[in-house]
Image 1 (cartoon, helix red, strand yellow):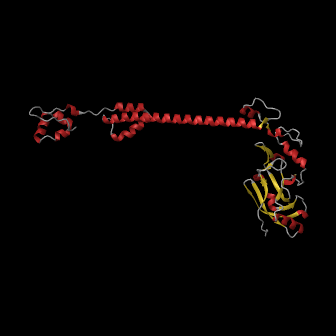
Image 2 (tube, one colour):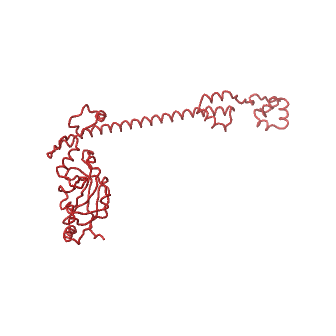
Image 3 (cartoon, helix red, strand yellow):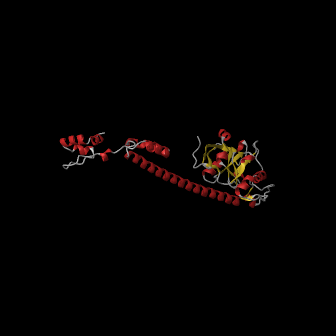
Length: 329
């Protein structure tokens, strides 16, 4: 069983650049080979005598790749190193990785290795030196320091023949495609590219324009929706008034109101045509005549007739048959 240790070692932190000027994306580190042989070396020396242990509980957590050491303390030289780690005199490790040139790219003005394969992790005394990460060819042979520097610089826009005395200003340049130049409003493209700050300013300007146009569009949509709802409300109110009038006139029954309003909302002209073809119910009460003389009461409705005495009702029916018929038709 692994011996207890105080804390894990950080293999990689993608937020920090190594001494070669680039950072390594933690999510892009392939652990397949390493998981089968999680070897721990001393200072990246690939020999049996420099195997000082192995790693366990290797995991990715956000931007961090870490693991716990298991030292082979049966070896006297390893026991010395383990003791220095336990006492806090050695706290650093370094990855040995294999990668493809095409996975070294510029993102947001920074050089980033997006994919690589972890081969081994070594205990090292100083994490910030050139051995903070050991880059290897596909055959496992370590890359020379100048090879790595030239490789890193070659992915930076504007660097045609990279040298060790890098001009920092070139790090802030970027080459744009013709379509991007037109979209961002640049008239031409300098040989060494545009300043990253200028490009970012153009992009920010376009973003602000898009947001402004979106707000204007949302306001226009809201105004149009409000106007549409107001128009629909006014139309419905007008149609309901026409239907209510038709009910009052006796052209339709009250329980037909919803159906007629729905018809009017679909076609107001169709509603008007239908109502125009239905005759109004006549009010016969205005034509009722009552017997005159002797203070005879006025009869206009069936209720007025019911209030009469039997003699008066008979007299009304005899003297005014048409009026009687109109009351009870």
